[in-house]
Amino acid sequence: MDKAALGDVLDLLTRTARLKHLPRTGWLMRGVNTPESIAAHSHGVSLITLLLLDRIDEPLDRDRALSMAVLHDLPEAVMGDIPTPAARHLPDGAKTAAETGIFEEMTAETDTTNRWQGLWREFTAAETPEARLVRDADKLDMFLQALLYQRSGHSEVAEFWTRMDAYPWAYPISRQLLALMYDQSRAS
Image 1 (cartoon, rainbow, N blue to C red):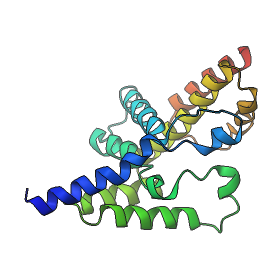
Image 2 (cartoon, rainbow, N blue to C red):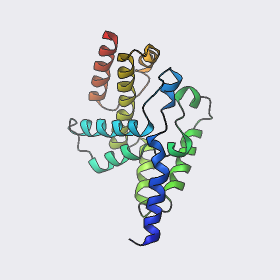
Image 3 (cartoon, rainbow, N blue to C red):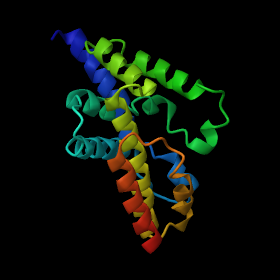
């Protein structure tokens, strides 16, 4: 790889390293003083994706699913984490359009541009089994974090459980994991 291409890779890594320090703002809004970072959430989504892949009988492309899980919040390095209470005040499609533009700009100079942008479009469209699996993992990680915060005394996050039926779960195991989390939240 030539020096210019390596420079583009380093630039992308530098820009996305912000995810390690940017907090998930939905937790801040609910009184969690030191919430998880966006990168910590992406790690959780990746791990849940891997666990789900190992438990679903349907033939799925592991590489595509795990790649989507790793990449799904990359635009938040520029845009930050816009929580649902704020995002619902944006025009339909505005958040996705902004994230897509940021993603395309961030990855435009890398040698993985076409592959990564294709994965991004696949994830946002949620039309493939792999994209739907990662979307399940994304929501499951949010509910898992709510459970963990609730266990540590943050009762403000209990409101998340009122929205657990609002998501179109793609896989029965996702609904089963959510139900188990909910049961444990009620015991907390």
